[in-house]
Image (tube, rainbow, N blue to C red):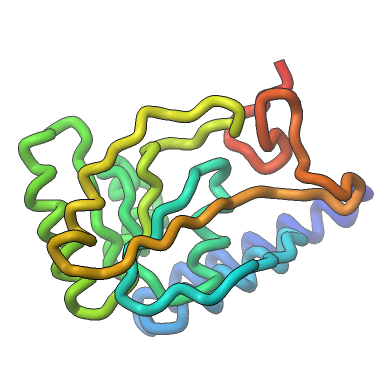
Length: 194
């Protein structure tokens, strides 16, 4: 991709993000899905979903490879996301996350976990799908992070299905998954090439 095309994509993505941050708290409902799809399109990411759409009121459990994962999930279906508490303090993103109902996990205070699981259970019982990354952070793909199973209790308590979701990224240049020996380098938070 040329330098000009990259700049155009970044400017378009910034415009979508700024307008989306202003509109999402007001519209809720379908706004996050619409903004996520628009951002993915502006960034040149084509989303391909395989399998049936998750039934509303399901606990969606996904691997976490990239910052794009959240956009990909939001683009598929309406859902409530679970995020680390630190996201609340992020400029613009934190305010938007609070406004659209993100459930925050305080990993520094394990005693708060039962209250968070109860909050997830309530969302599931209300018929909202909830998405969580049980590894708690991004990983390149070859190694797995420490699995945090506590949120599964919410699915048990709410008596809802757990839907596993595998996220991967591919490139037009490479017909297979875009990976290095340690994972999905091009879409990942970190460069795993080393």
